[in-house]
Image (cartoon, rainbow, N blue to C red):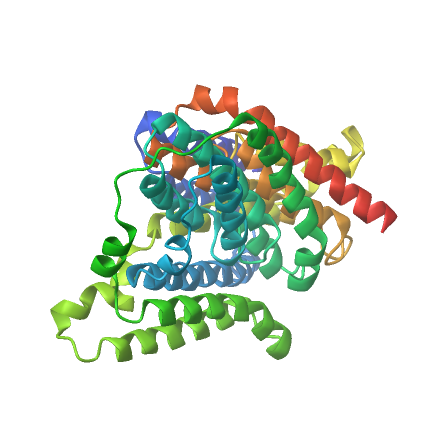
Length: 425
């Protein structure tokens, strides 16, 4: 039985990894993999009643993650539809290359912690297209956006889907993950940033763009209100969980409900057709539903492997073979540059028991950092990287030559910072 499940998962994973050559979306591959793993478990497990109980238990935990992501994505889309992010982007006016590089990187770093690395990278690339005309010059900024977005998402419970999974699963707590990973994540960004600061000089080449005219032309009623309420709703989720002890998705859906009602009041004087682009219904139609279904399929497959005991046996084998958990987690982070970090973290959550490795243990903090930032080593290693690659047509080999070593240097620098803080402070 275990051999069949592993074979199905391996074939499904290959299908996901070669999504572009096969021209098949990774979501149906993940769904098929997850369901087939459970089919084998039911057919060969011998105890359908117990398997049904296990399946229901796992789906309850998976649903928490999916509803959390659904609420977060809808809030971000609502803010974006109201041009809310212009509160930040329209205030960046410098033409100095080094100064702009630092501003863009730091804004991306902190914005990613509040939104997520994928959405932030899209927002920042859209901004860069307004600011920089030269394609080659813009690519260097885009490369730093990838590193900054992934580093910023790692230290926040709502900034990266893997950190969110660990937070919702109870492996980390919101305050502790911010406290422990903020400095390592910042180091991960600053080290490559310092190198590029010496390499890039002079003034940026700007498009002919009238900022004031564009701001007036594209201004949407209630944009500032929607931005501050939307960001406030996202930041309120960890506070809501701490005060009420309710699951995070409840706080996220509460924030969505409040923002939804505000958007309705803002455009109450418009007819249905005019206010349609600014409604939550329209925002729901724009969210990346295929990504949510992909997460679901992967988590269903991982739950089948956890129930069958495969992950426990694999963890035992890794501990016996490698021995050092720091090396294991570091390797997982680097592997996430090649293999999607969602199934890697999901598998790790199943491999290591919370009864043995308590919440906020070193292994979980390192896992959040390594899985979140390791994907920057290759442009295909993170959702942010793939998005930037598509938007800016950045070649895989170009990023490999120009940014992979920089990203790896930042990765190990941040990891060293974490280990020093952990051992000495």
